[in-house]
Length: 353
Image 1 (cartoon, helix red, strand yellow):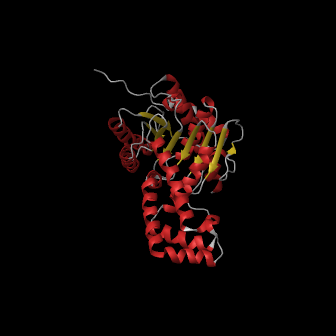
Image 2: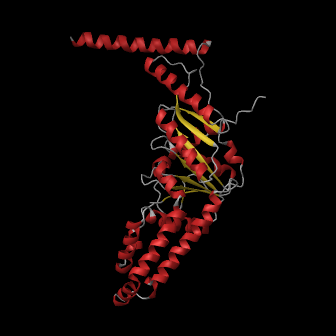
Image 3: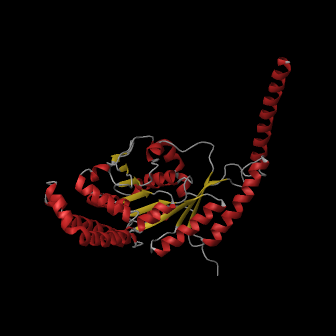
């Protein structure tokens, strides 16, 4: 029985009308931001309104669209329904500006790594849920951070336990301190616990949505190299552990064998890449694997993103195939050009003598 190979594009994401959250993640430097920008551009063609959010501390969305974004959703130039925002997954300083609260929260954040991120992520999700976007694309930080986002409910669970123990330990003292400082009821432990509980509710509600394959999917971005393959494998296993749906892999920077390549170095790279691409197909035979070409230039700005979009929906085919009349003619004209350049360089050097 021949099993059908899934389509090598992201069309399945565009066709899944129930999708509410799309995460795009992978190792640093593999083209996640370009991919999340393009997926959001494509979704904007088929959905009513799209928000793309960068949770990577090294924000690149502004660079990809060549437009400045902040923590407030901003309409992307040239679109009527695509918005972008950049969120720092660390707590804003002004959240900690009050003395009594500051000491308390810093004690808490030191006690549990990641709780400050958890709280600011929860605040952001609360904000996002009040907005009416049909689909939200996350350009996530490199793998480790992404997986931490998915562990937030348990991180906050630990946070609440810690708060309870701090309350038991310093309860009376804390109440007295807030009274002395004249901070009033909003800084009582009950108010603090109420806030943490509220955040935890939001996170748990969102987490239920994240685990629903009708609402959420994760797109893994990589390049055809050993470390990236290994990282993708780890990511896919972790996602399965968190019960988060993933059935799309984007392989960036592929050198295609059919392209007219003369360089020995490039031929060696093609051979190496092919080995890993074969492994991707073997490991993820039920995934939609999209292969994208290595380009001579960066994909920056709305125009370039729109142009590159086509390779995400229609599998890329090299323009010239080795061994055809056109390819040989192209090679001859390239060699002629190179010969002319070499001759004029030689002439310059001789005259310089």
